[in-house]
Length: 99
Image 1: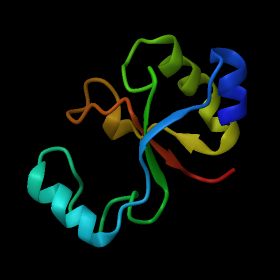
Image 2: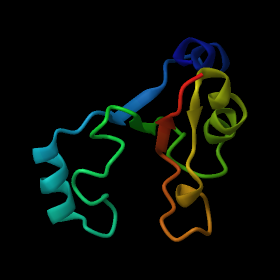
Image 3: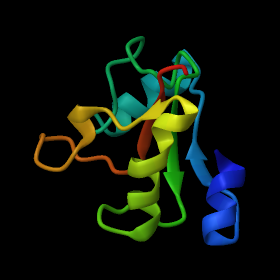
Image 4: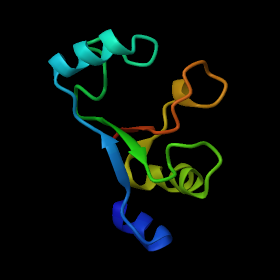
């Protein structure tokens, strides 16, 4: 996916966060309970979620639009709970669902 993204934007996908240990989930939840999942329930803890940057982290950008159009080809999705208007908007959060 990153190679296809680089062909479109001239550089690889930027990742700010990926796998989180249980301890790091506890810390993050303590710091940002409105933003982080309850420890032990995060897809980051299963190695199935990434937080992206480089434009993808903002709704309405060409980079975000590219992910919406192409992520599924590579087994990734943007969960509906993270979509605009669903209460916890997180354009940067993408999950691996398999191919």
